[in-house]
Length: 85
Image (cartoon, rainbow, N blue to C red; front, side, top):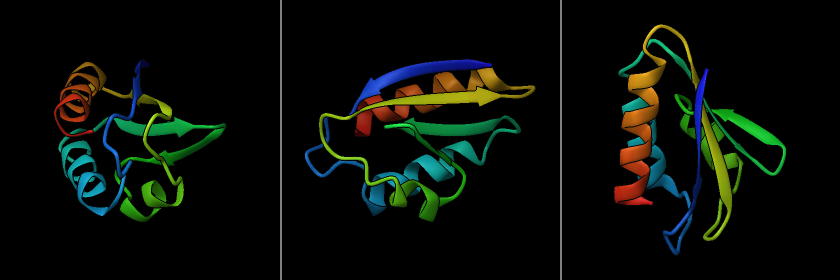
């Protein structure tokens, strides 16, 4: 399993547009991808699950990937978050 932590910089947090970008990116990989915040976690491949976490500006999140292409998934998701969140 590979993971990284990230502090949300986007003033609006993870709302519909960035959640959609995360879902689209995660679905490109076979690895199971999850986002954790405040003791809760969600499958990054499911937009509603991401939105239910209520991730806001300044929150620290952990992204984890486990599977055959976990390293690629983590690298791609980290780059996406740094550029958009």
